[in-house]
Length: 247
Image 1 (cartoon, rainbow, N blue to C red):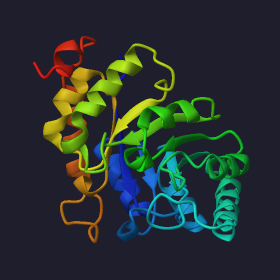
Image 2: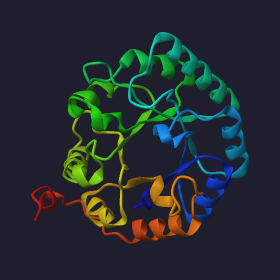
Image 3: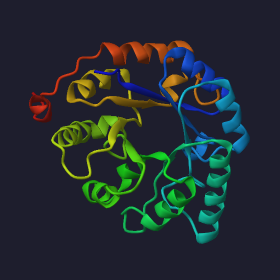
């Protein structure tokens, strides 16, 4: 079995270098974490791409929250996505909800039309959806969708751990809408890892946890390495029945 995926948030090339040195498998490239991560500049992507050879998933998001914004905002975001695609970006992170808490399919389709079949993650908008299962089914046929970044609940992994374990079981059972990889992230801690690994979750996302000095400090390679070691050492089993009952 391949090792679990460790994705680290990077704000620039220095973060990318440190994450790679610590053993990260992939980067999520964003700017402005005060707004929970927005679309970075084309130049930032180019610098990161020059600095490391890790896969880089680029955030497509114009403002805090999970709404795509008005038509002009969405048009501007599509323009930025096109520029990033022209620069060589071929993996993305996006996700929008409509006023009813369902997936904003027109906004998703608009961006997918620009990024031209790239692989992408639907981010933690799923944790604010009115109906997680309905959202998954609505997105099941979208081209390129291979990952859900999720804490299982809006309050983070502490609140959503049982949901993540249940969804891992449903994915293992091949239920419709559960084919994309579950990437656990959002308040994720090292002590969550053994239970998630045992449940079959094999992708993990860290942001602040990779920065002991906070968001004003860079990614720390040693901290990423500790996560790498913990993920690789955690037990894995296909039997999730005891976990879903809390036994």
